[in-house]
Image (tube, rainbow, N blue to C red; front, side):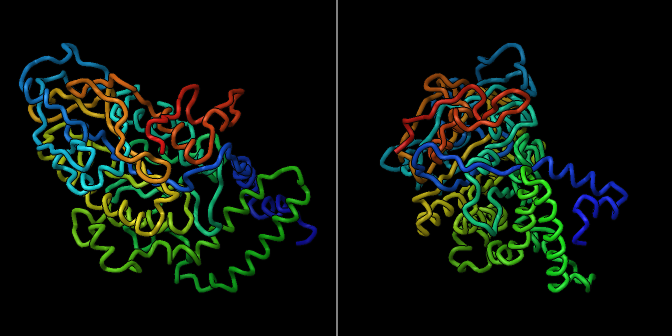
Length: 464
């Protein structure tokens, strides 16, 4: 075997097909560059994404004018692009709003637990986007582009900063147990960045969150001794290939991914086992309630992963589709409360738990969605898609608590003051991580691509 090159070995073993597959795998890999342009205030990020378009005027954007104008036909006469139906009458929120905290921020009755922490958050009240369609909107909020093929924020962060630990992935995705969001795995894609930076999708509800990490008991030969011998042989071939191609770093990237898989056999079972947490922690996240169990489990898992050195964790609420998410077309009164109830208690527990573990000192939490909803009824009681205005909030390291930046019009239809796009949110997150968004680039097809495209400004008003 000493005289046999890696490529020759695979060509002989698979009639050349395996060699072609290897070349394709190697062509996707490259080493990440550690990039930091100024001292960071944040080392890790948790992103909470509400799939479907969470309604701002029924959650965080109190609009008393809607009650005064309720029932009047004041919307656009022609159906705007991306609307599912023509605009109906102005519709007031069916939920009560009250002021909370020292800041007196208005929060609807849908978020009673998060309302208790309102003074710790910084709100972007005039978020806006370029589309009223779920797929492009979800791409834009994650990658900065309306079309597929571009790296998501988690992939850019992984590419720029690398890992904080050697035995867990840098970027982990925790999708809803009901299914993946719009665009499926495209939301977690590394695009034209090396494939090693894509999100690692974990099924938190499964007894084996990482599939195929261990060999099936049906295969007696797949034991630790066999693993060691196989890895030794693979390492020998890898090193021979690397010696023959000293200027090609792609093999090292592939080796690193294999080594991570081996290390996860030791680290993953402990990291993903939320049963190790005290019963009081389980209860705080809502693991004792069917309504909150799934999202609560994933929020608790996000905390454990962040604590163990995972740099970026996404927690998704809702799958794609017409039901079971925040896409409340039919009846806002019956469709929004189940979604709000499923996340409110777990999110509040997440923030409190991060603080109790001291992780708030270098962790950023983001709550967002792909767009908002109309102040006009769709049918009689639903709300249609609306990219004109929606709400996001930030919490944790480097954030000025109790701040609200920007505002929408009196109906919550359009952002009117201090508009912020995904570009500004992404630029601010990168800034907190010590990265200048204009300097983090990858040359692709002759263009220096970046997460913020040719846009984006850091939002100083929300920074501590």
